[in-house]
Length: 253
Image (cartoon, rainbow, N blue to C red; front, top):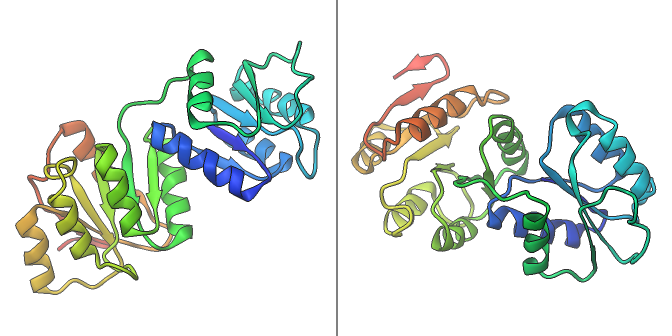
């Protein structure tokens, strides 16, 4: 899903609502950002605000559909403007304020159901989450990115992801504490949990993780490859936390 909305609160609400319903989301605040995103990747659908700071919403729609990979993108217009959608090839027009139920029902009518499963990534560093989300989307995963452990635990209460990626260094709760909480939750008790961290792990740390069946991936700036390879392995094999591999930047340790 491509979310095009200049109001930051509306954009955050749309992104969270869609992510919680099972959609992978890329959100932008302007027409130029939307066109740039559409040139880089294919989207199944987009939500479009007509009142953007740099372009008319209909111009954005035309430009996005002018990219080969998004020529037939399903579009739901969400705006305070009630008229003007006729003949534009828009699947639906929702007038603000929009309820979550109305938004999701509109996408179902447009033939864009969410994909099953998600990858929950918990890391307090926003740029790291952004990099992980883009990479996961490119590979067909649905990322759910949380900066706070409490938000990750709330997500687990309502949905079972395919795998969980956890950083050990977080401000309000250590990764070890979060893993213990996750392992106590019915929706995460047997799921693959991948520890993705820049922390130097001592012998006791490794023993502690090995005891609960976590995979440990060393976090290298700008290199998400080892994490993606491990995610493909655990999600395709269906292995539920049965193997531990400590993969460092230069090889295994």
